[in-house]
Amino acid sequence: MPTTTAVSIPALAVALCAWQKGAPVAPVATALQPRMLAPMYRLVAGSVAAEVQAAVQLVNTVADRLRRLKRAYGEWRTFEPGPYFDLTPAQVTLLTRVTERVATVHVVFYVDALLPAFQETQAYAARFVPHFGSVEHSDMVITTLASQWRRMLAVVEGVHHDLRHDIDFLALNAAAEEQERWTAARRQSGSSNDPPWCEAAGQRLPSLTLSIEFPLPAFRQPGRKRRLQRTWQRRFGFSANIDADA
Image (tube, rainbow, N blue to C red; front, side, top):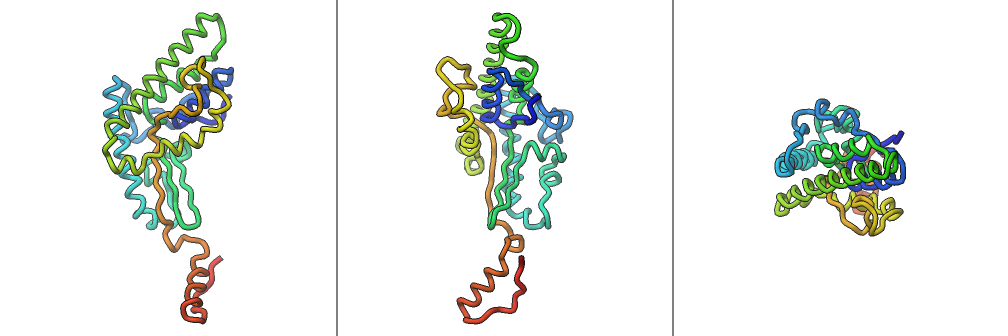
């Protein structure tokens, strides 16, 4: 059984390319099923237009949380994404990535994994193994999955279209970043005869992955006191009485 669940369209594309060769696809994680989600993340399957509208609202909600995090982050001694984003520990692991660097914080939120169209595509692939049974059955499975894949892309592309002039969304849009993460894996497969998820790595895949980067609060930056000591000494020629940190 696969050990990881894809949480973005580029990641799902890689998983489906492997599925095409016989590797199983991880089912939708229990933690991401609608009944397990807070109401703000709970979307209902419907027409493409209805899912686009619901996804736009979801993206705006997550984007607002990410923007406000710039100010809120420093209020936490140790930031806890679960309470902040209203997620359980399992959901935090799947949907977010928080990376503290020397002087900045990088936060990613994987919105794709919450879309009904994404979960339906993933769940369908998890139920079937390609090239199992008759040729007709295998062709039917791949054809059905390709239809679901295209519908999923239509939803995400519809969201991008509706938000194409939204400066806040454009500033947080991490689709290119997420695509780049999976480019090497996608290069390992792909030809003109492959199904849509295995097409050449140069093909751009849409995603609603969002990310933000902002300065790490000064009191959390490693070596801050040492830097202050050096600055003080350069300016005034002697060391300030500042306790050095680790």
